Structures are given as C-alpha cells and as structure tokens.
Image 1 (tube, rainbow, N blue to C red):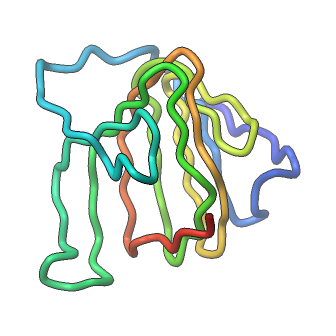
Image 2 (image 1 turned 30 degrees about the vertical axis):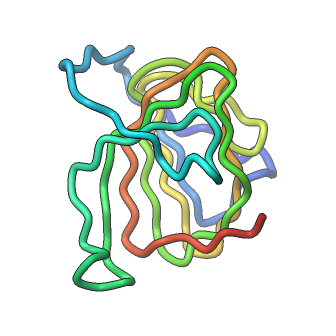
Length: 132
C-alpha cells in the first residue's frame, strides 16, 4: 500500500491510498441512470440511502461511469470515500486506477469524469451541494 502525494488539487486533509489490488470483478447487478439531467453518462446501484428518513443522512452506492461520463463540480459538506473498482476515474484532472482509495474531507470541491469508463464504490456521510 502506498500513499499518493498531494498534487495541489487536493485538500491537505484528504487522503489517497493506493492499495495493492487490481480491477474487481462485479456480479451482474442492475444500474439505474443517476441524475441524468446533471450527471452525463453516470449510473448507480444504491447499497443504502439514509436520506429519505434524514435529508442529511449517509449513503453508499456502486457508481458506473460510461466512457466519456462527467459529473459537474460540487461541494462536500461531510466526508466522502471512493474506492476505484474498475477503469480510470478522474477527479480534478488526477487519474485514479483500480485499488485507489480516496477520502475527501469536508469542504472539498471536485468534478469527476472517466474517458474509458469506470466503476467506483462511493460513500458519503452527508449529501453534497451542487456548485454548477
């Protein structure tokens, strides 16, 4: 396991670990379009969602980015953890490969995309605020 260097596009409170695992085989699960008016080419498989009972509740999901998919800039009000399972995941022009574990601190802003496509596991303790 290695810790990635802070590239200047990360908050000093963020942590990025490069774990010694490769791409993960996923079971055949259903994905649904995820905010298609906002997130272009992004699909979701919800693992849990506490927001219906608490608007500030936590959630976790598998998120799939089709080739060329994009998510606009948003602000994290709480912590977010992303684990890259497959493909190439890009946040703020930094490419993360399978095995990358990214923990974003509250106050982090970022936009995401994937040129060839990817699948991530994402968990948030508080929902995000859209900036664009």
